[in-house]
Image (cartoon, rainbow, N blue to C red; front, side):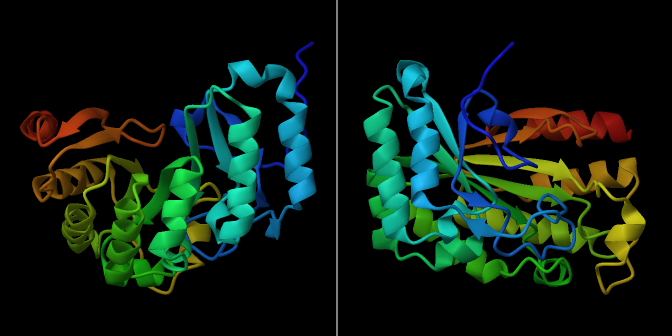
Length: 281
């Protein structure tokens, strides 16, 4: 029987690329938890865990200290915690695991806005390397009806601040989140947002409400019509056509995606468009 020394508060989520990471829950749930499309933490009430409980989890892993290379801080938005508390946790991690190579976490644009650049630099110097940030869309109309809590301009400010502090970002756009009515402006304005922030990593996922489309429609105040598979691919094409990036690793290989694309933009941009045109034709 396998034994793991930490008892998690479920449900527990992590990015696909953190599959080999140790997960440390520093918060439970999401402090915002109002996005209409997101059901990840609807069964949880947000709570910041006590430092002594977090440290107890870390100390339970000390017998495996030499094996730990990557750590992911959960749940939805650890950066809502005070900088001093985060620094204490990061220092505990780096002192406990001498061979650690990366510490990452989910982050929201709002929580980044609430940190100063100086605070983000402190977190970077303490060991935080990578932030996963769900932008979902770059279009203000879409961001408003999905109740994201930040607009296009605020997202640019938040991401540029974190990247100026030396933190790498992996950002996500949701294909189809604008429905048929806003598909074109969602694709174009999302590309404009990505161009303005030049992230290290970019991924697109497809809107896939766990509780069904009727439940999603009950949570938004616009007439929402779901895109079919071809329309989703057409939206992806428009998004990629409008990307102007220096060097961003792009992935469209989540379980929700109909079309698998993996490469670097701009190097592979034309190849992606050729793949898409081949499918559409």
